[in-house]
Image 1 (cartoon, rainbow, N blue to C red):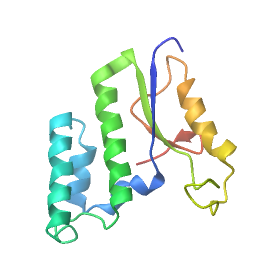
Image 2 (image 1 turned 30 degrees about the horizontal axis):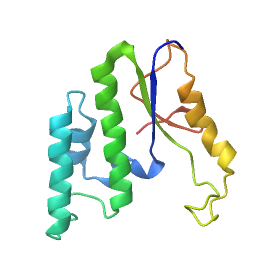
Image 3 (image 1 turned 60 degrees about the horizontal axis):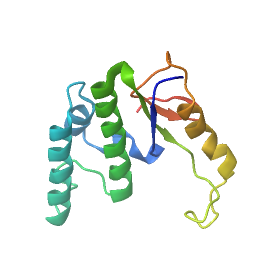
Image 4 (image 1 turned 135 degrees about the vertical axis):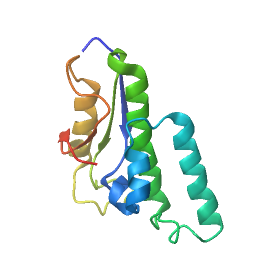
Length: 139
C-alpha cells in the first residue's frame, strides 16, 4: 500500500492470559492510551521490585510482559494513527537463530515472512492487530 507501515516484532509469549482478568481488561481496553499504558508498565516494575508481582496479578516473565506491553502499544499507536498508517505486531515464531542458540524449530526465513507481509499490506488491510503464522491471531 501507499501508506506507511509500522511492524513491531512481538511474541506469542505476550498473550493476555499471563495476567489476571482485571489486568487483562485494562491492557485490552479500547480507550487505553500512552499515559495509562505507561502507568501500567510502571506498576509492573514497582510490583516486581517489591516482590509483589504475582500477588498483584502479573505474570512471572519479564520477557513475556515486555511483549504484552509492545502488543498493547501497537494497538494504541494504531488507534492514534487511524487510517494514516498501518500499525501491527507479529510473532515470527521460535526460530533457529543466534538468539535462541539455534534451538528453535522454525527457519528464520519462515519467521520473517509474517513481518514482511505486514510491511507490504495493502491500504485496506487491518491495523492494530497481532499476527502469527501470517494471519490475525487472538491476543
